[in-house]
Image 1 (cartoon, rainbow over the protein chains, first blue to last red):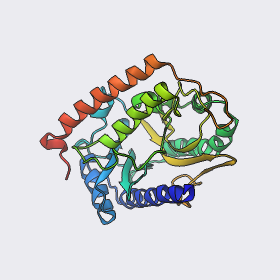
Image 2: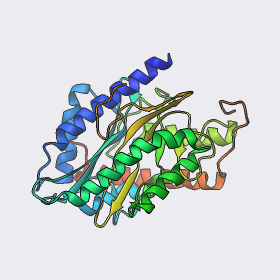
Image 3: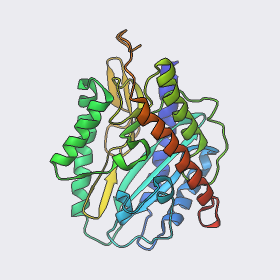
Length: 267
Length: 42
């Protein structure tokens, strides 16, 4: 039963990753965020996606570190801003496939510029991805894991960007799907009802009956257990970068479903 | 209960009430905006 659930999430994550990477490799200077979002949706069409945690996001340049977002949910929506040569970008999508949620994000640089500064961000992300597997085992609570990730970013001269997300999350649970909210229809773009209602219910149930806290953030009281979408997001100068992958913390087994940075989902 | 049998600690409820209110508010604003012509789904 448990194995089937992990396999379902891995399959959904594999499809999300393939769609994002297909589009990421085609991104060119002059593309608008909205045009690339439409291309991600097209790439996901063969998977027959009808339900989402969130529809695709694309953030160019300074928007890749959430500068000037205001209300995050509105600021994060795609714009007609055009990507410049050598500019950093982030793509992020979370479709629900066969009832199983996914959430994958990729950070890249448009052709035609110097990528050295961006490479430093990717190097830090790769280090974090490697270390988080150890840190999550050592941490007495999700809060401590968040502190450690934040401390590592700051000590290495990066800005912490994931604390600008709603609920200031480093990550969120991927447990408890499918549920009564998974089949709710898409409304517009951005966060969707399955995400909003699943996590709202998670928060209420945490306080009413002591269920596991649904987020990894500075307030997470319990030791992480189960499947999480983890999304460290950092910035330096005028741009940011992130990865988003699924972390399995299950008894003695702690591992990424995709161990490499933006690498293949092994399941 | 935690996996080791100890009672699960709770997060501060005030911050989670804030998360809920801001989450619902942000979702409503985003939905109104994205249903406009500019951000309509393709």
